[in-house]
Length: 257
Ligand SMILES: Cc1cc2nc3c(=O)[nH]c(=O)nc-3n(C[C@H](O)[C@H](O)[C@H](O)COP(=O)(O)OP(=O)(O)OC[C@H]3O[C@@H](n4cnc5c(N)ncnc54)[C@H](O)[C@@H]3O)c2cc1C
Image 1 (tube, rainbow, N blue to C red):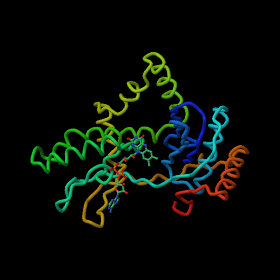
Image 2 (image 1 turned 90 degrees about the vertical axis):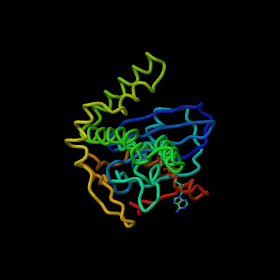
Image 3 (image 1 turned 45 degrees about the horizontal axis):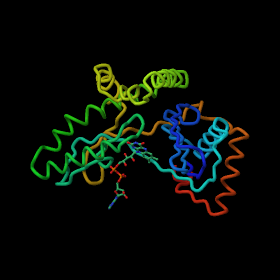
Image 4 (image 1 turned 30 degrees about the horizontal axis):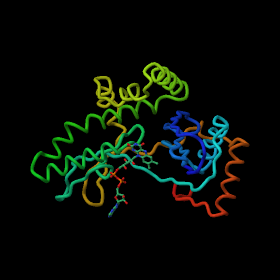
């Protein structure tokens, strides 16, 4: 993603576009004059910078009032895995270290806080961490694995439908959360998808510390991920190179892929 300053009012936009954010999502957030445009790639790509440049070019075109002064580019690699146990060698694994993350979109703040509280209560002798997690948290994570399996099977047509329905629901209720919250809730359909397909995506792995996890392999690129950058995206890349020479920093490189 790219962090910038702007005089644009506070704004949050989520963007499903299989070209700019293969299998995942891109977004724009502006809070108190600081903005972030980000794209997530759920399929392994070479030269990942082209996705960010193209995404920024998209927002430049669609938000002409977004006057940006770039500061920094940030990025990193994530990993999704479901452990067989959450306590190992007397250590409690909470949050992302414990594999508690939404497999569809990578969200994990609520899981981190919830699992931290549950672990603390176990240490205080008030509950059993493993069984509470399996009861309260694991069903939602399994739902997210089903969601990921389902989203892997669709493209822009379905993304557009989801966005249009979400937008209409938000207009009606004046609240965007209820529509999307449904997607994260366990239901019988996603339970079936998990049992039949979701868990088969995962590969068993023994980590260096002996923990056994079931890891989601990073998908490879699809033929449709091979495209030439637009002129606007090339210009965005050039502009960033100038910013970088003037002191802009980047926290990742394409060599990391
Ligand atoms: C760009 C981005 C956007 C995101 N947006 C959202 C969002 O909108 N909503 C959401 O729910 N989630 C989001 N997430 C995911 C969310 O940030 C994580 O799931 C969540 O922060 C995990 O919390 P955690 O405490 O488990 O791990 P972390 O927040 O990663 O905290 C782990 C801490 O441990 C420290 N650490 C690591 N090793 C050691 C060591 N050996 N000794 C001491 N300290 C160590 C690290 O420096 C770090 O500070 C986002 C993630 C990214 C990268």
